[in-house]
Structures are given as C-alpha cells and as structure tokens.
Amino acid sequence: QVQLVESGGGLVQPGGSLRLSCAASGSIFSIDVLGWYRQAPGKQRDLVATFTSGGFTNYADSVKGRFTISRDNAKNTVTLQMNSLKPEDTAVYYCYSRIWLDSIKTGDYWGQGTQVTVSS
Image 1 (cartoon, rainbow, N blue to C red):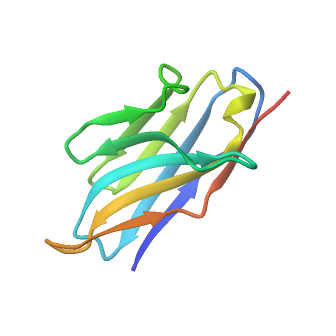
Image 2: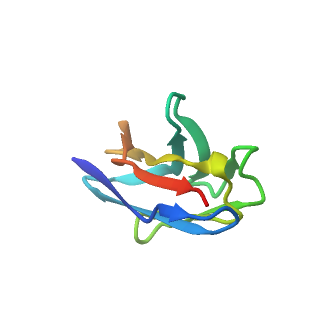
C-alpha cells in the first residue's frame, strides 16, 4: 500500500506565491518519478512538472520560469514552488508518483488533490 499526502494550496492573489508539498509513504522499493498535475473545472488533468530519479525535470510550457519542482529522495517528498501565480493557474493540483514496488513491478499513484485558487 502506497500513500501520497499533499499539503499546501489555498487562495492567493494574482502575482502571489504558494508552495505545495507531497510525501510518499508505504511499501516503496524506490521512487522513479515524482510530480504534479492539475485539473481545472471542465478540463482534463494536465502535467505541471515532474522530477525523475535520474534528476531530470519537465515543465508545462505555461509554468516554465514561474514554477520550480524539487525532490528530496531521503524523505520521499516532492515540492512545487509556484511564483507569479495567474488566475489561469486555478485548479486542483494532484501529486503523482511512479513507484517501484519491487525490482520488477511499478505502480502509478495519485494524491487526493489540493485546491489552488488565484483570485483578487
């Protein structure tokens, strides 16, 4: 059993900053990918940023230069620092992880989601 527990989120004015954190726990052999997706009302869930075990990061074009993803392998945590927030960043943000359950099997896991609202 694997759990992803998110924290952070909330209401912020345009131009403001927020920080999201996510901790993975449970039957984890190792973690391949940690990242964040978001889903606005009436829209599909889209990639925000990911951080692989090899140290590679990937960002959606819409957040490049404003958001920064970081990862702590010792603590199995991932953090998303969001700066210069815009109303279009409003969405439910989901933590995502691809986890090695043993040396052969992987699984994809999601957090429960945290609301981010950017509004004046």
